[in-house]
Length: 222
Image (cartoon, rainbow, N blue to C red):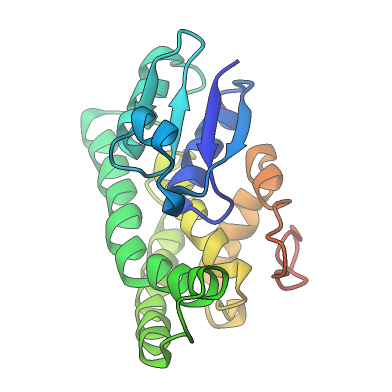
């Protein structure tokens, strides 16, 4: 059985978990505190970051998109990258958007200030960084709403890895109660649709010791 090294509020690891679950691949989750820089883990991924997927053959795959593309090629059905060349390009564009732009401008700041500093003894959260993340979040929620208003899913008519990438980040941000969903009705409608997927429901059952999500976090109708 493949082993996925992860930690609970890593959006990159959540993305790969969603892909594995959508493709009905059984796997073992193994918690990795990658900030500890364990030598054994660094042998699997010299970058020292989750996710890392260790295959039954013993080969360790790292790099979020490298793992995602491997899963698409090795388990082509059900696909999360389907359609014409132009449609697949849009799916890849949005997947990159969520992992890089949303990740840099919102998710990483949120996790650093509200989780990592607390558990790693890095001092008090930086209020300016939190305000910056809050401001940037509004821009991204507006964009998600724009996409959801024009398409059934974010990249088109089919659920794709673009939706999985967005869910991976939005679910982390929502864990901290930072999204006022009433302000973003189109984005909320999309999120309610994807919450109904088995893979997403499994993800939303995660809990981090000492920090509880808001009551609506794992509710399908909220």
